[in-house]
Image 1: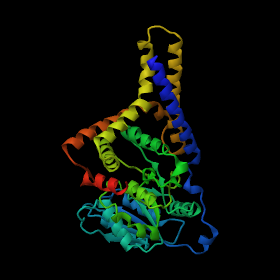
Image 2: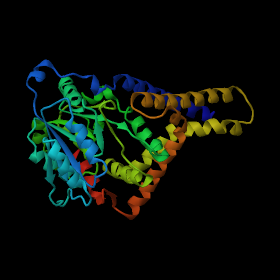
Image 3: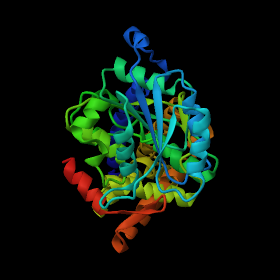
Image 4: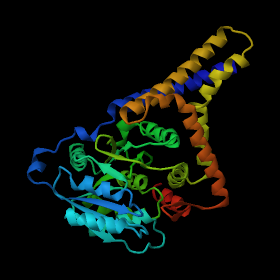
Length: 396
């Protein structure tokens, strides 16, 4: 009887989750569908494309060439070499000889209490002239409609800041298990309320594409306010929402792509950076583990174990079996919707329990790491735990 009550509660909560997920699936707008209003076609405002680059010699060329060929012509492309020790700067310099809109900026030494990317973005803003600031990463490749689509979307939706998720390039099993789950999580927040909300927790910006109105960015202090944040994209979108400005996240898979990580070590370091920036205690991370296990892993276990823990098939057995099948079906359908709307391979949804194992393992490893050390590393720099407290206190 206890198992039945438990399954009824979990099934009900998963049903609510699924209804919200389905609404988000319908509402998650594609920025490539937006067109510039007629007034902006006649007089196009300047858009500053701002790219921090640190040791990006294998990516920066493709990124810059894709941005130099945008359909939206009134752009400047500023690339900051953030103390690279590879050939990043020389590649940028060579490309700028062909594409005159590209300008190389030599980054200044990193200041205390700043993370590298925040300081790079701050320097880029100070050197830019555009009415709109288009922040992107050096490991992205953009379709020629990327800037125009983002600007059209921002203006049409009457927003102050927007972000868009990319098409994720995944070449290894590790990437597919972790990155697909991250894509799945994008459709969990209630998108219908984010634009109208003043609750910072709904800030879910993605740093590979952030488009911001310059005047408002300047008014709130931009990256200087969140200078020590490990996850500047989430932090700045939360800051905009807290200050009463309109933010929304969109589907950008038809406008640009990226490959986030090359191996499991990079995946784990990136994961640590994200979780250190969003969760400031072992308790909060433990709650994440609990939710992942109870709602997204335990139903699969119970479905396999049910015949072994029930000694005879009666009405309770079949009701529990039905509820467990219902729970698993809801989870797999939600995973399928994420693949259809964003990206991924359909057969990977059947490996969902393995994806959850990956996430739980990395969360557990992070808990123990936070006991013995207060930092992780990213791009060769240490990211300290004080950054978590700084931004969370700021956004309360």
